[in-house]
Length: 210
Image 1 (tube, one colour):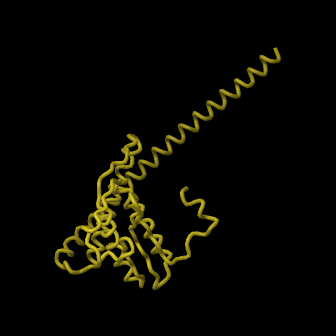
Image 2: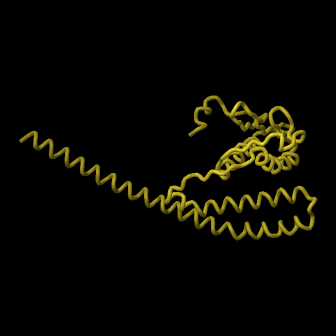
Image 3: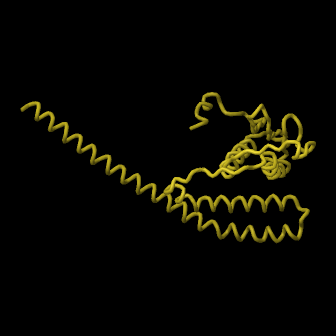
């Protein structure tokens, strides 16, 4: 009888815990749905002002095709519009768990376009920006000399590069140098970003991939 009593107590505790976890799971699902709805609402709200910025910039760029700063502003407004569209697809990605779509790209051409966006910003903030292929400055090399094609998810690679470059820009000292480089070793390609900032403290380096 004592054993049966203990067993009943354990079973009661088990069912109480099960019920508790079910409640917690429902709350988490509700919070996740609220988060998704928030992102979608925010994205819709952002689209209008971004469009109102992008269209005048586009017209001005046609009138003044030689204005480099105008081109940079337009390119970044287009990128911002693109990021907002990605937020609108957030729910679809979560629900359907879409796989990454891979497309072949010329890595050098891709990095060249990224560097054009940042080089102008660096110049206006007294920073020097280098784009290197191997050990050489890109302007000395034609794209045909280095046809590095890889299959990637373009959106993901773009986010990674812009995040790294934004951090390099944020922490670089005045008159510092930021370098974006591509190196090839056998069948491997490596994208590198180097700056003259303080770097990540040793105690925080283990947290990088978290």
